[in-house]
Length: 270
Image 1 (tube, one colour):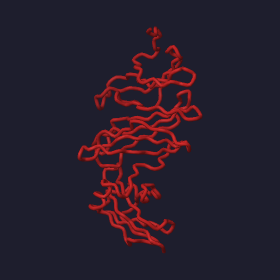
Image 2 (cartoon, one colour; image 1 turned 120 degrees about the vertical axis):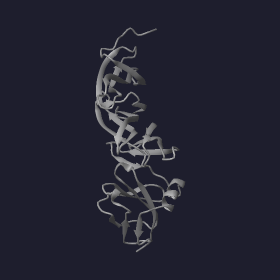
Image 3 (cartoon, helix red, strand yellow; image 1 turned 90 degrees about the horizontal axis):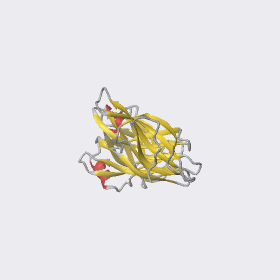
Image 4 (tube, rainbow, N blue to C red; image 1 turned 30 degrees about the vertical axis):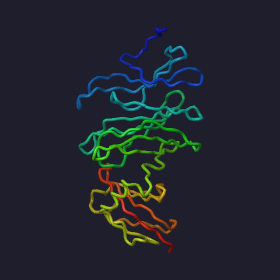
């Protein structure tokens, strides 16, 4: 059979259907808005559309900023309280004279009202496609999203992001220290850490002012981020007195994630 019900929003195209427990359907749809006067691409407005079990229209709600026709949720999670979490991709974003597609996570209540959204790319300097293809929820309520980014040599790299229930990045792009990608970065590292091994405080010296406004992060051997701060000068102080002895990695990201440097740091007992 074919539903004879028509949508009351002109130019609205339905996308993926996601079932609800009561037999009704939620649909990620987009409304055509015309051609962007600056960039020349087609503009769309994202919508949630609610359909009953027979696919009859119930309501439609626009949400978020204007989107591109390739923007989509590849996966929808349903939280225990009924909230919906969309996981997919958005773009293009114009950053530092380059175009990016970014991973997209957005949380809604059961009525389709947006609560928060997060977009980001894998922390590599290459522009282009970065996206999430799916995800899941942990018992803590945190959200795991997995996807792919693009390295400068066009090879894909796996990308994993953990988002807290309120939309904050918990741990992102974690690799063990033994990762071949990070070994290459460390072998050619331009940042320096003194002293190394360290037991109290260490100095992190950056190669240029390009990193100002970016972030300095410290990861343990399992890939868990234990520290993060914004870079304010080319020589940063790092207090490691509360760290357990072992091998860590110091990573520095420039603004816009165009440059990334990593160096190994050994922490010993004081």
